[in-house]
Image 1 (cartoon, rainbow, N blue to C red):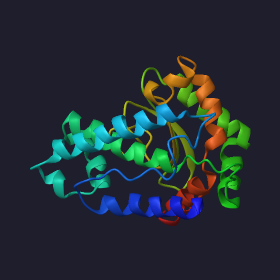
Image 2 (image 1 turned 120 degrees about the vertical axis):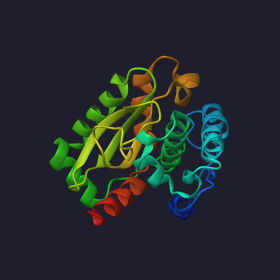
Image 3 (image 1 turned 30 degrees about the horizontal axis):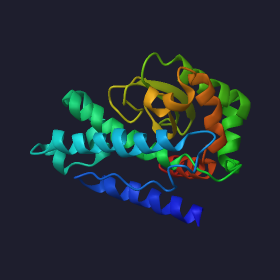
Image 4 (image 1 turned 90 degrees about the vertical axis):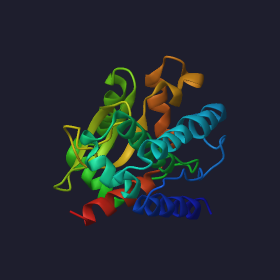
Length: 224
């Protein structure tokens, strides 16, 4: 049932980018589903306040402009030419919609054989990949994200972006299709972990949804 719910969310997530106005999709689990790693209060505030504000402010920022009829991907691919309010809120909306789906209360999900092979070939091992991803998150000064993405040649890479930027945007140096993102804004972890971002980065692997990340990986490489 949980897998079906994730799949349904992913379908809605993909479909809504076909047109604006944009909407926030429901969480595929309860606010307290990730307790022990991400607490219920943080999840509720993060989803119902922070993420909700991005989609509301995005719709406000594009009202009456050509972007009102564009997809979210079209907006992000030309975001360097758009106002900061569009850049920040389009990124905030996309990033969070991805973030909810790559987390899960299901225990011990595993990468697909294809993704596991790609991780080992690119980074040397799963542990080495996690270390690189955690470093990208820990070294991000201030607010931002750590990403696992697929580049134009179908190769994996880890990167970090400030604020609500992401690898789909034309403003970033390392461009690609994100398949996994870790939010390192303080609102994602501060109530439980305070200033201990490294502890949050360690804990998030306990609720990582490898089934969804694998699905995104195989979708991304199929388009290359």
